[in-house]
Image 1 (cartoon, rainbow, N blue to C red):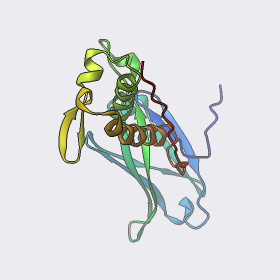
Image 2 (cartoon, rainbow, N blue to C red):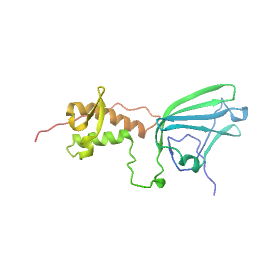
Image 3 (cartoon, rainbow, N blue to C red):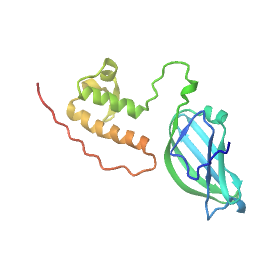
Length: 188
């Protein structure tokens, strides 16, 4: 069976999977001694990825064993080329590493922090908050407060902030659309 190797970089990476892609960089061909490298950083740690030459192209191959050791989360990824003398950064962006669910040994909440906050804010605003939703803590104006202690007027900017944060997580590398929230409050 022949494996098709993508010619674009993935928008997200799956921990525990074999991962491959091939990139062509006309100004930095692998045959001229250029290497394509990636550095991923987050609060969870650091991941370095380096390509190998495939003619003029840069081939990235990550084994399932290697990616299984990655912590899931949102990383800042710097993409660069080097020829061991010069180094040039091509771009920096955010990338998501998804958890390896097959390695989970117990029930786990796999939502990101932004998704958990957004879900809790929505539950409070909609009047269907569980105790954990109402007790969820957010930092506003330099102080940490529970959602249940915030007014609707205080929750709305948080709703907008976390809606955008979740959109960015789900659409890495894309420009964020302008967001307008309309809320209708009724008594009764």
